[in-house]
Amino acid sequence: MSGFLKAGRRRTAALLGGTMLSLAGLLPAGQAAAQMAPKGALVVLREIDADRYDPHRTTATAAGEALFLLTDTLVSMDWDQKTIRPGLAESWTVSEDGKLYTFKLKQGVKFCDGKPFTAKDVVYSINRWIDPATRSPVKWRAGPVKEIRAVDDHTVEYELKEPYSELLLQLAQYFAGMVDQATVEKLGDNFGVQGFNGVGPYCWASWTPRQEMVLTKNPAYNWGPPIYKNPSPQLDRIILRVIPEANTRLAAIQSGQGDVTQWIPYFALDGLKRIPNLKLVQQPNYFYDNFMGFKVDKPVMNDPVIREAINMAVDKAAINKAVWFNAGEVADSYINPNALDYSAKAASEMPEYSPDKARKLLDDAGWKPGSDGVREKDGQRASFLLYGIQQTYNNGMMQAVQADLRRIGIEMRIQLWDATVAWGKLATQEFDAFVMSYPYASATDALSLYFPSGNRPTPNRMNWNNPETDRLISDAKTALEPAARAEAIGKVQEQLTQAYPWVPLIRQPLWVVSGPRVEGVRPHGIYGVALYKGLDIRLTR
Image (tube, rainbow, N blue to C red; front, side, top):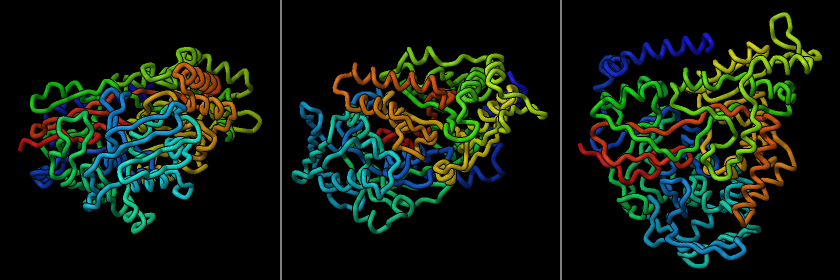
């Protein structure tokens, strides 16, 4: 284990020793009393904020934390992360050729401003999502749309140019959330920044970036997904409060300043389980991976030998132990083995951890150590710049990776940004590599996000441009038979494994801790979001 990781564990262990006894002492005197969770409001503690809350123009999990509460989708996701349930649509049919979906909408649905929700709102929302002018980074999720039609006020025909095997799965994601045309047109580029009008269980009251968002109950809402006991929200108000520092979040939960959070520092899991007035619940069906990606067309990163050596040099097990306190799982493949269409063959071809083999690989390729220990070849230093979001686990992982790479003669420079700035930075060509975490529901879902050439420069931040990848992903998405889809997306996994555009790092778990006045919390996990609709959550006092 590196000196950095050993030191990190010592520092964290020292914190942990006092965590369960005096976490409230980490806050300034008097602050606890000043910020106690207000009566009638659930205070949800978050680690980071999003840059905007427009479902069609963001990919941030932080945005989903609010958007799943602010708006609804045609269909919903069950707790197993696989089964599609009714949402705004009470039923649907699919044509034999897989090209026409007909949705029957629930009646009585209303926007937060009281306006009735109809099929015309579905047509507007989906068309806005896929409109090139919207510049949605995830418009591909809507499928190859031919036309969206309102047959009547409560019937929508969703016609595709070709079959799309994962359409319903994608329509459950917040990107497919319904929006109000009048509000969009009124706010323009500030939609989701200065306001929002949705059909979710909660309504936009205010947002102070980097601090908190306040939501109030949609009084008309009684059409919640069938996975909940209650079709209506049980809370009058939700406050989504940003607390970036992990120990301060723990202190807030224990002192009553906050009620619930999914952003638990993993060193505290065992201790939290022993505190009688706190409830700790895990969602076992959770696919959320951390990885480091490379811009494969930039100097240094365009050499597959460099990328392969980096894959060999990173000690993921040590990172999991020191940074994640063994709560995570070492990612030894591009896709979680439990996810739909995972390829065991591709996983078997992943490079094993071996710094010695990495050094030999670089030596044989002509990358020789320079006077400062950093390798050089043809006048080019083995040095690159990494961007990412500033948060606890990125900080720890990237410092560990930096130390691992330095030992094989590769220099990694790190620049992490606040989340409200980072998404814009990660859409540029300023950097050579990046660290990212992302949720997914299947292999096709995951790889269709990051690797199609049409998704450059974001979310395809690797600038991966390969016609065979595009063809295979298209084959997977249009397959009518599960076996054909699995074969096509399996070949994509093999191709990527052999080209090393990523270093899969750690698969993270989903735990939620809640305080003594909260009942009914069950973590969901759709797109990484724990509370989803939160309809069964209630306050006891």
